[in-house]
Image 1: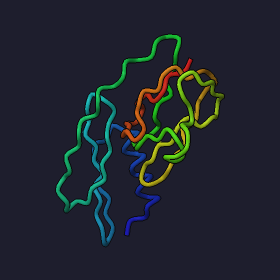
Image 2 (image 1 turned 120 degrees about the vertical axis):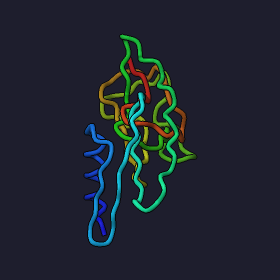
Image 3 (image 1 turned 180 degrees about the vertical axis):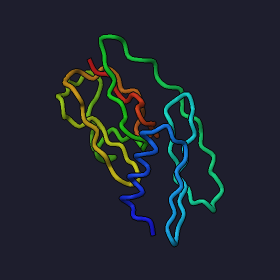
Length: 146
């Protein structure tokens, strides 16, 4: 059986390279990691080799680039965007809220792991660019901050 940590490392290699496919085999299993390249950021899919390829929907049109006086907080991974720590809890941030460097602004779920995304600099949230529960792409803008 292929170790999950090894698999995660291969996924990271695929995301950070120009490769579009990696196939990993051991004595029991074969796993093929593929990504389709679009004009938008890439999407990584994990599929067993013997299974038919599942269709991948093209990424939604990217939001307009932030103006010169604002910067984007971007997704560091592909996953599901959550604005709050739990459905009944308030959102981490909202438009007009001031955040400090290191403050949690959202969670992105990837491979059943909840990853806290933090502000890389202090400022005021000027726009929330995605909705709770949306699938986000690597490097997709999530918020603008000024």
